[in-house]
Length: 361
Image 1: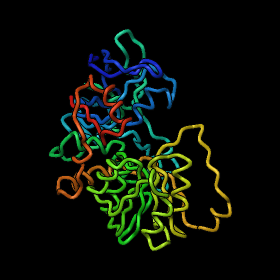
Image 2: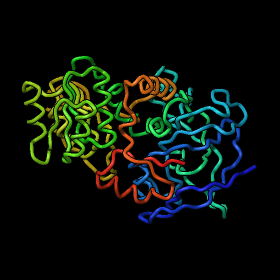
Image 3: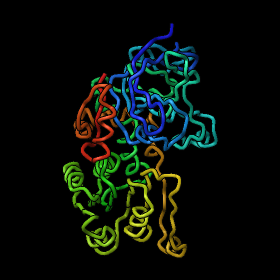
Image 4: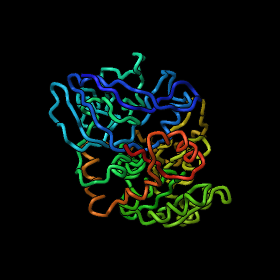
């Protein structure tokens, strides 16, 4: 039997979000209905609201979520009703060329639920990143559900569903930060701060946080940055080189995703160092670099998709670290809000007042 729940809808580009009644179908083969416990307010949701990702309005927003599996469809074996799960937006297929080569974190054929959630009048909804979790319940592909230890706080655990995992993975997976490395992170919002935390977990000897907002730099220092640079007041490339003996960092993570910050990352790394782009550019952005510099400086220029994570591998491990007190996910939760507080949370996020606002249902 279909269910009626409340959800946060983006009706059209640049229009304020609103709460509407959403119809959730029974799960079909390979699908699951999840009762949402918490969902973080992510920049990606704002991009959807502004029409920056696609024009497939109306959107059911929200994707950085944790909850309880309520019902599963035929053929689902990995999760069952009652399981506490983190939702992910890259359910791997297991069959594409990346999966068959043993690199499922690069899966080129990720999938979502086949059925559509709708408004009460039958209008089909586009769920943000195939999830749509600013709602009391949502329908997803069962592969988007990763079972983790239910002792974890849902508000903290759900953040692994997007931003925090992206930052942690940019350091741990894509950047392959190792013991004794020097790391610079440009941009210390939620993703960048998570990259600082990931670098600390990996054993980096020196972690340089770069931002234009001293509040964010203070937070990064509390969570593991050994040095901070306000790039509004100082040239970040010169500052990073000065802090690394004149050489540059072994790994530089661009968590902003603009041509200016990417160029800074490129020239702030040591010879044969690594640049990791985890900030998401907009379609009109262009990058120009002297090809001789690309060749002559060596090393690697990498993009990080979702922190190159494999949810089935990474989520349970990171939740275990959290429960052991070795990964402070709670520090990313700036506030908890009600479902009707999403629009105001977007404004606080734009102003840099929070790492994450988290909707509690």
